[in-house]
Amino acid sequence: DVKVTQSSRYLVKRTGEKVFLECVQDMDHENMFWYRQDPGLGLRLIYFSYDVKMKEKGDIPEGYSVSREKKERFSLILESASTNQTSMYLCASRELGRNYGYTFGSGTRLTVV
Amino acid sequence: AQTVTQSQPEMSVQEAETVTLSCTYDTSESDYYLFWYKQPPSRQMILVIRQEAYKQQNATENRFSVNFQKAAKSFSLKISDSQLGDAAMYFCAYRSPPSGNTPLVFGKGTRLSVIA
Image (cartoon, rainbow over all chains, first blue to last red; front, side, top):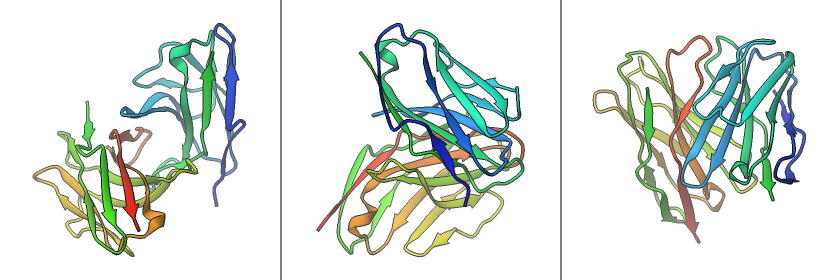
């Protein structure tokens, strides 16, 4: 089975810190995604990447950046964390051309204080 | 832009009963995929069922089935013989075109409680 691993399950950071959320998948998937999940708002797309070094903005990219230097790893970066970025962050991957939906990581709950 | 609407933020069902979760979507495309995902308290998102728009037959996976009404742009999920383990957040999702790199668009979710 495809496995998507997010490096931290819970994370607490201070306002203004630079925060890295890491996501690694082990099945050579081309597509990787970062979503943010908030109560009552569902999952909102932050960024996605369809190949190494390629990235596309999603619906809410402000305050975030991403890095994909290797196919298996997709990092979400909060350049200067703010309290309104306190949320659950979900990473997902998908093999190009396959239509079985995503494989998700188990999420990182980030609290910015 | 495509949108997905889940009009029921919360629902509850008695154990062993049947419940239907609603989902509508807005699109001008004719070829797309629809999905239902389950997120239990463990937070792990699990694919429950998917439906290809070109297929008229409703998808079924054990106790889970969908009612896909393409003209009405409706995609409801029916859970039969509800079990305590069905308690979770359920998200409806859409994707078009079926191939390529386009991301899933999710609804806001429905929290399902199962009463023993």
